[in-house]
Length: 197
Image (tube, rainbow, N blue to C red):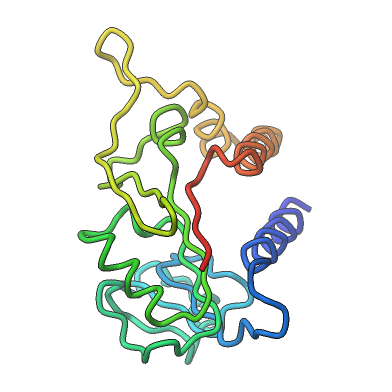
């Protein structure tokens, strides 16, 4: 039941990400960049910097012929080759997010990108793998170095306890609680900075 709920939420979120595409313009073909082991269900092609995230045999079989190993800074696709490009939780990891974002907009006629917001990085949880806090102003990408909230010199993340419990405890109730919190923050626009083109 939880898997069906998660799948329904992911499909609803995808439809929300494509709502800006003008009527009569196609979202075909769909490219999902840096998706890890969870590409959007509608993706025609999937890319990541390595195949490691897809070590599970079922995932490899599912993506056979659709997976391209490449660097987001130098995508091996022609300009405007895709009707829609999806890029979630990737740019904050990149060496040069401005160049990476330029590649997204080069290969996709339309697209959606999102990265954790400053609120998420400072209040929920900051990943040490995140080099940047990414934002957009008037469609232009902005960056700043992430910092964590500190009290008496100790880094604290007040909401992270729920995410931690969902990941480390067997009770499904914690996963439901975290999903409700995460989706609520997402709907309020607090969890991610987003851009559409």
